[in-house]
Amino acid sequence: MFPEREKCIVKLNIKIIAIFLASMVLSSAGLAQTNYHLPGNTNFVGKPYSWSLGCLPTNTAGYIVDGSNGQTGTTASNLIVVHEGSTLFTPGNGAPFVMRNCQWTLNGGTLKIKTMDLYDSEVIINSGSVSGNTGTPKIRIYSGSTVNFNGGSLAFSGGYIQVNSELIVNAGVFNLDYIYGSGIITINGGTNTFNQGVGYSAGNDCNDIRFYGGTTWASRFIFASSDAKATFGGTNAGTATFNDWGSDLYADGWPAGSNDHQDDRNINIDFLSNTLVTLTMTAPRALDFTDENPNVYNPVYTSNAWAEALWETDRLKFHGRTKTDLGGSPDYDWVNATNWNGLGGYYRWDFDGSTLALLYEPPASGTVILID
Image 1 (tube, rainbow, N blue to C red):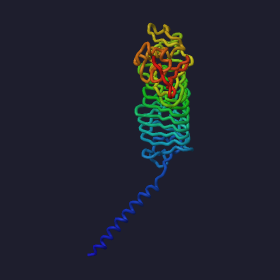
Image 2 (cartoon, helix red, strand yellow):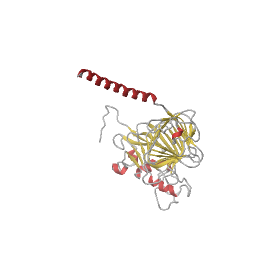
Image 3 (cartoon, rainbow, N blue to C red):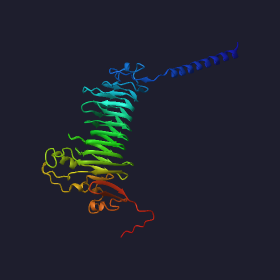
């Protein structure tokens, strides 16, 4: 009867509903609050009552700020945490703090760790500090987990990191006893000290460690298995310096132990063509690749000829290729591989008795090269 009036009513109702829905969305956004961790030694991060909103930060980040000192507890699952201040302690009684499917970003503050195990988790350290909480502090990076170290400091007196997934060091200060594991360790930068070694004296090594920059110092360079490898690459300048090879270091024979002989035979080092990282050995023993008797020490090369020893026995590679792969003797003998263009492509090895580098020396523009 009044079609135009009915149309106006319908339009008005639609408009009212739209305004209502919009106001609800805006109201919900206005009610959104930040979820803060509450201080106290029993307010464990994996418990809902430990957070200001009474729920775990699983969808949006929860924040740990100044004044929120406390304990982590033993478990945390599916959490998103931004740690900006305060000190949190993992259990000191031997029980590990286990993260599962978590993302933890340290932007300040301190984590004091006895044992921390990561599963399918990501830890990002931008600033702040990670230090030990009694005993032998350790971080174990298990399947599906990544630790990105972008700044700050990690110092474990007597402690270690076991990498069975991935560790990436871009900046900051690392100081611990040793590092090892079956995963991938990439050092792009930072100042990194391993007081006992890259690898572990009980027979564990770094399955895949990549020196792509930064400054690294370690007591020992350990290759305890035939799967272990070290790669020098990246585009950043850097140094990797070690006192000696091997894990025993004279523990069961002089001047090398039986495990040292095995480690010598397992050495596998690859210099990629773009690397600006050098390898230095400050007090190495002479490498012994023989196997007549584990306690008989009869190296062929002297201690300051370790680079030649590795190259001539195919334990040192240029961009994935051994001397044999490139063509073998006589063209790629050490005496030739250290001369200009000795490796082809204007590359050559440079070695002064302690430091090994890969040099790229293209001729100056306009140079005419005459070949007999």
